[in-house]
Length: 561
Ligand SMILES: Cc1cc2nc3c(=O)[nH]c(=O)nc-3n(C[C@H](O)[C@H](O)[C@H](O)COP(=O)(O)OP(=O)(O)OC[C@H]3O[C@@H](n4cnc5c(N)ncnc54)[C@H](O)[C@@H]3O)c2cc1C
Image 1 (cartoon, rainbow, N blue to C red):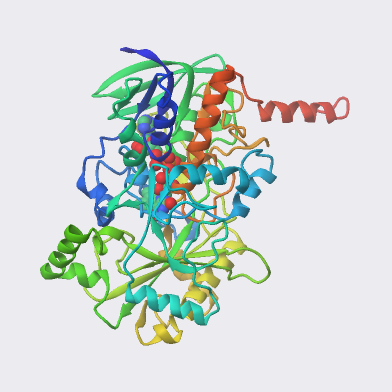
Image 2: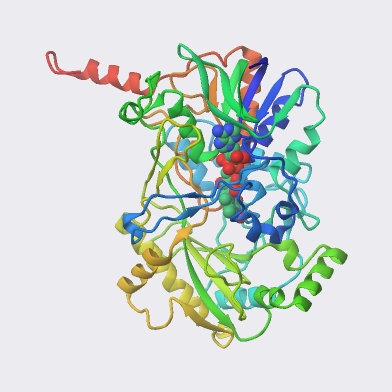
């Protein structure tokens, strides 16, 4: 069945997709189709911040992927949740609002991505946000995405802030100015006690526009290509295959795991990988699915000497009723803030430089992130290295578009990553030993018997897990492994962009939701500008072909090109 054409088709109604749907349909001039594989975001567990624990393992709202057995992590398969509903992962994430460091973006620009320095991207962060701090040089108050301060002070987080002070870490009230060093409370993507996903912030206000059509339960199976140009999309909805055409552009926003999968299924990717699955090569692009980066979190767990933790709130019916009532009356308390309230960014490796680890402090403990709380007063210090060197891959399991992609994270593959991770764990122990914390906390995991760098590394390999930031699998750039150019147009293919977490050349130093919103805000300006100029049909430079012809030109006569 063929559906009438649109100007823009967006594949993936997730974090980036909802931003794009709003911005591209705003002027009423373009017909926009948003395709989302999952259902509408009607579940109350999405909207109540504490629902994080429920959506973490939800059968329909979460893709529930697993990595392959990871040789560097004791051959464990690591659980990788991903949102599968309108709002995508912004509908199920931990709500933490962090942009990263100014240097992250300056680095993107320094490797050849013009227009992506901190100075260039800051206006898009500002444009996106409705920050309860109010407008200022680093913040906006008129954007759709609510970013709220945590208003109540928690005794445990206060003790952590005081303890970090003893270690010389300054207290900060804002991690999002470009300089994130310090300890304090996170800001959250919440609006008056409710989750503010991009579906809530961006899609709802655009929902009734006549030029925007949103299809849910619509899983794309691949792109329709005419020669080297994307002209439409195939998708399955209600058990039926459908096709629809795009007169201007197709925009892939299916996330860091499924955008590269869809490119490969459509014949765009590494030749050997496509051949392995019998897929005809339309355009050889070796970087598709390469450069996978993620943040590994190591969770240290403590018993807390006072019954002040979220475990205590959730243990009894009375406790649940109390926090439920508090949320109903004041929209505050544990139900309104999710799991992680406090954060800390510092440098643990020798030498100068910006923070290299991030801490998430949860007033709750559980065997795994999002798992059932322990039946005792507990809390968690989660530590992650911010700029890992290790790189993984996303490849195909088969040519079946409904099969999950194959993910290999390859965590802790380099000595620098191992050292930084171990130093991060040691820093957590120094923090827990400061005077405000030493009588309050007793270490449960790793446990005091685990001593020495090797034993701590073993602990990391045996228990470490994702903090849910896979990125970089369709990186922008101009080297032979780049998939898009700096305007996010797929190299060598016309009418096709990628706009999501996969375009990051290097993972930002922090959580990835706000950076994805920024990427989509900036992309929407580029897409509309190119449409006005009639430039979106231009086939972006093919770095592979360019590199090949450069080598051919440089090669001595008679040598193989
Ligand atoms: C459990 C969890 C906790 C996290 N916590 C935080 C946090 O606290 N703070 C933070 O900043 N970041 C957090 N993150 C990370 C952050 O949410 C993601 O990096 C970001 O949302 C990714 O955005 P995206 O647009 O790239 O992908 P997504 O938001 O995942 O969107 C991709 C969308 O595409 C859809 N899709 C996929 N394939 C197809 C197809 N074939 N056809 C149609 N649709 C398709 C998906 O269903 C999904 O809706 C967390 C992530 C998770 C999963």
